[in-house]
Image (tube, rainbow, N blue to C red; front, side, top):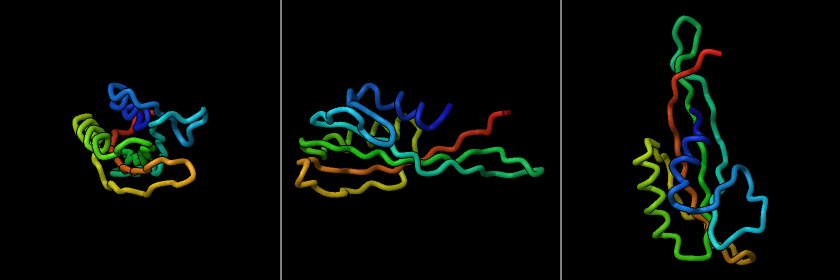
Length: 114
């Protein structure tokens, strides 16, 4: 599995449109953008890595009250096995009228034979 695949699986029941990197279509009232931030090899033995540490930022953009969605996202991510490393209100964007709330997550995976 990969972090992006896991996040998409976890977020699907919330019915929020999700894209990676940038939202490419006309943005709806509420959407998520996933930005991969880290994909580090870790836990070395015999010159081989045995773990991959992956991190991503989920940016929630909403014209509604963001607090309810923040709670739903937090619960879904934790239930889905993600470690939340940061949550923060980024701000209100006057030009687009969106609240921007960011949640950073990480997960460790065993390395796969390549």
